[in-house]
Length: 384
Ligand SMILES: *Cc1c(COP(=O)(O)O)cnc(C)c1O
Image (tube, rainbow, N blue to C red):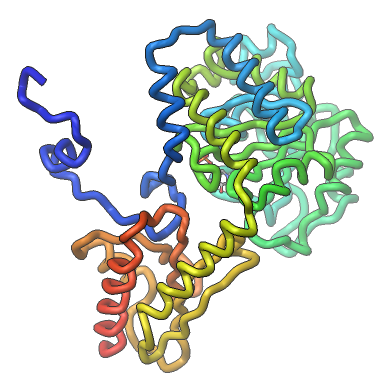
């Protein structure tokens, strides 16, 4: 302030030469996630001048989150990613202080995590952070419960279950996986980071037998972008907490601030009270309006889609056979280079689909998104 620098974020971005982005692509970390709810910002601000003993605060906040979502126990992690790290650390150490202290050196402790080959995903390496290694089972086409069972040895620490995208008939169902794991006294470690909403998923995976389940706090829940919540059976949640920051463990770098913890609790409080039917209806209305505003474009089939893989209604723009223009990635790049800068989902593997996720679009931005998308699509439709 002595330098005459304003506190306003707009001013700060201008001074630093960073152009903000309209986020029409959903809560994607590289595009700075979701907009924290006003309740979340208020809770973080209220927490700023207060000091606490962090273990007490983490335990109390975890208990409150567990109560709110109806889970046996909960703790707070640095994103769902941090949750995966402490899930694995919990499975390896099972609360043994000497093992926790040694990680990522696992000498003598079981450190193998069984993972289905067709469930491999870019973030799964987080599970390896505390010194785990993967034992892959099945192939690209699927896996059987027998293959999982045959891979269990006395070096096995746990079994991973990825809940992402559509239900996959090739996966071993979670209930079966849990039966196999529990028969050998092993935990099922579940990554369900992006599976909220629906709110019913808050307890679904636990009911199906997962011992630990990670969700992102900064995606559909609109808590602080850096938070995650780890739900599960009380003993496993406690093992995970012992492996987590602020303790001097392998996860010490994954700390969550007292303010962010308050923000996550506020986000969960709000999330569980929102009427999901009304929320979905409003998203549907906004996305239909956007599709109408974009209007007809030669070679593009526009629709509003709801259901897997889009639980939250999306406006989807698909290039049909008469489209001779550039692929979705190029259109996405052009929208990011334009003014205003607009990010929308342009990573569909077919190369032929763009979609708009309503979660992070702010009031008043829908028209700008529709206008720019229409301009770029009409221009691109004339190229070949
Ligand atoms: C988003 C995501 C993560 C990472 O979650 P963060 O909260 O951003 O750390 C992990 N796994 C899956 C499947 C995800 O979709």
